[in-house]
Image 1 (cartoon, rainbow over the protein chains, first blue to last red):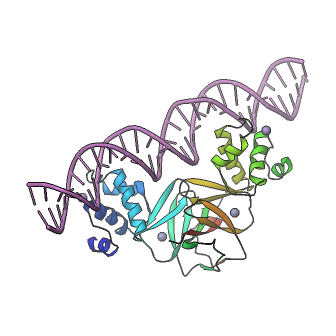
Image 2 (image 1 turned 120 degrees about the vertical axis):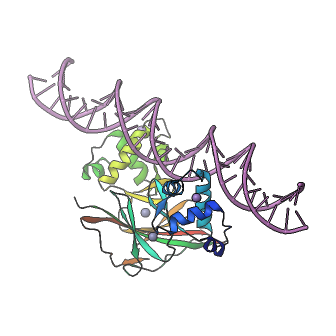
Image 3 (image 1 turned 180 degrees about the vertical axis):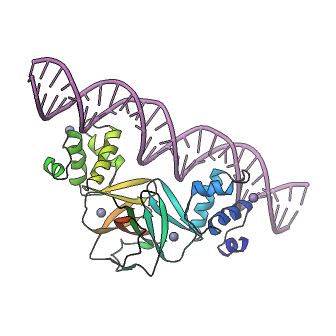
Length: 129
Length: 129
DNA sequence: CCAGACATTAGACAATGTCTAAATCCACGC
DNA sequence: GCGTGGATTTAGACATTGTCTAATGTCTGG
Ligand SMILES: [Mn+2]
Ligand SMILES: [Mn+2]
Ligand SMILES: [Zn+2]
Ligand SMILES: [Zn+2]
């Protein structure tokens, strides 16, 4: 885990290793709150500020991907390979869609002086009523 | 405007007409806060609770589309025709991408008992550094 | 050991959105 | 006109997520 952090130019401190562990050992999409809870299950170890600071750092360094899908919280995705997402509105469950299932073609004209940061494709589903 | 509301099965009250007017006369993507500000420019008329209640009602009735693109606020889109979005991270500016510029193909297997509510495609751009 | 950079922290703060109970509005029958 | 009842609006308390600041802690090279 420390090596993974170092390979992304992140100084591997105790807290950062714990937070990376929470994300990568589960391979799930977690919110900051969930990361906080996992990291502090045994005994309180890591502050809220550090969780937020660290997740932001991980995103900047390309270690995890930020997902804006739920209006009330951001999710963090340890899978940075190209893939899409399926969001179940009623339950809040977020799952991956392999890049082989859906493709995006074409690109719009971009505003001058801007570059693409990422393209997000989200399929929203709800209970069949 | 009252007829537009009625055609979507919405009882056209004074406040609802004002809020619809704020959205449809501008044809822009507005946040709840911006709607609130526009509606109350001349004189305070509509409460925060009503703005939120009404926007939720409009979404339920299919009059406007909800866009989850910015981690801190929801945008409301008076354009319900199929189209995509371009989000400038640095400025928060949100603009339309015509459906002719980008296409999505394929569909993932959906969880049992669910139906598609919508498919969102968002191109995120930032200043070229 | 020391200096200085880096990292962590508690808790105040800000912003967005939700909720509740009370007030208001309005269409309807009389 | 008047009373009734459902729909609508409202103020403001509340909850949640995330940010910020100033103080403290940690580590390393010299
Ligand atoms: Mn530990
Ligand atoms: Mn008015
Ligand atoms: Zn994912
Ligand atoms: Zn749009």
